[in-house]
Amino acid sequence: MSASHAGGLIIRQEEPRNLEFPFDRLDSYLTPVESFYIRSHLHAPMIEADSYRLTVDGAVKNPSAITLNWLKSLPAKTIVATLECAGNSRVFLVPQKPGAQWELGAVGNAEWTGVPLATLLDQAGLNANAREVVLEGADRGLPAELPRPPEPINYSRSIPLDKALDDVLLAYAMNGVDLPQDHGFPVRAIVPGHYGMASVKWLIHIRVLEEQFQGYWQTIDYGFWDEVGGIPVRRPLSQVAVKSEIARPRTFEVLPKGQPFTVYGAAWCGTGDVVSVELTTDGGQTWAAAKFLDPIRAHAWRRWSYDWEIPGHPGRFTLKSRARNAAGESQPEKFDERYFSYVVNYTLPIEVVVQ
Image (cartoon, rainbow, N blue to C red; front, side, top):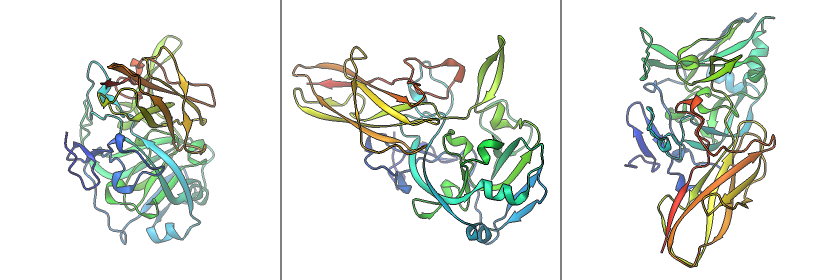
């Protein structure tokens, strides 16, 4: 495992660039730009700010092509939102599943500044039958996974119209600086509460549809099997499942017996707010409440800690954390196979050695 990137990120794939934040280094509420994980499906495009255009068309009355300067002249909004790759923690699945073998760090929390998507849709004038909004990036190529389309395609995802009109942001800044190229310069979508694949980078096209979008990354990839009346149906992934992760101690870390140790981590979810985190140090026999280090903020993680008195005798101990949200949803004990290699939010065991 190498971490040769400037931000100390772990390389999962060199091209297209897929880099992971070493989660055991978690120490701040906002993830520094240079430490934020990078997820790219295709080669990153080079876009010049002066020639950039964002097209808005489809089921609208007033199609347009927007420059970056014009976008920045509109009333701006800043939000804090956690992005998590839908495949985060995939490496822990048994048997191994295809895809980037993310550990814990394909997740980050940042401050995003831009223009609400609703502003542009309002100016465009939606048709009465508008249903979905497709977000398309400038990145173009053939997907890595089979089955592939017969020719290169642009990366694209759709979101329901009500979500598009709610809190989706067209961001041009991250933690107060212009978006770096790997994070979607000059403009990307931020879809709070949805897995990261919805937050399309290098955004060049917003298309309003009157029918359900059936694109590759909406159906073939980033989908899961649901059931309707006993019949399996394919649905797109959307909202982030409630989840907590232990940053410290690391798996198989050696700890001194009989000493105090602060267990540290973060928790997040897509709907509702994370209201509690519990920790077990005995493999799930008993659980105790962790304390939050951050207040509730919609769609942003909350770091937490737990003061553990390491047992006075040597041995192996299994730690797990379990988050619960305001809707009463808790992390499951086992992986849900309907998701194949996504939504890995079950309570992951962290085994440590006491000596």
